[in-house]
Length: 176
Image 1 (tube, rainbow, N blue to C red):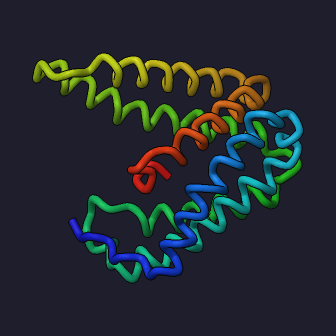
Image 2 (cartoon, rainbow, N blue to C red):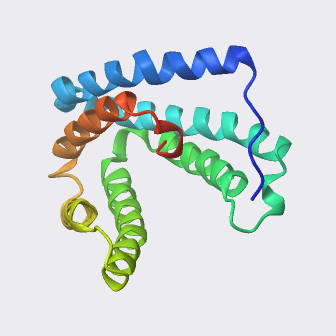
């Protein structure tokens, strides 16, 4: 697997600013003001997806990560850009779309984690915390699929908690 190139100093400072200051602030806003933020979520999510995709694409291409089948950053950045356009165009009516997409994404992530839990069971390795985390993630994802509009504010608050916790982790770069 290709190793990504080291970020220039200016981008490293920007990354530290984002993870050290902006992630916890965004987390607190989502945690405390989720019902109010939900009205603007189309603009916020669409813009964040577009920015992420536009920042990720040149880095992925420069690193030639597309040359390795197991890497997905080039494809992910293109899909983020395309999805951001849809979300920005449907900004007033996107909670069902975002809730459903978020639920499906959680299930896909849960599949990877469930595979790891089964592997750990088969190899008699520690698995309890991962198993609990996986079941909770799958339950919340199913809740979003069952009722994307009704549980969206609750999930915005969960995202707020996740952003705060993410900003405290050393290995956040693989989680974003």
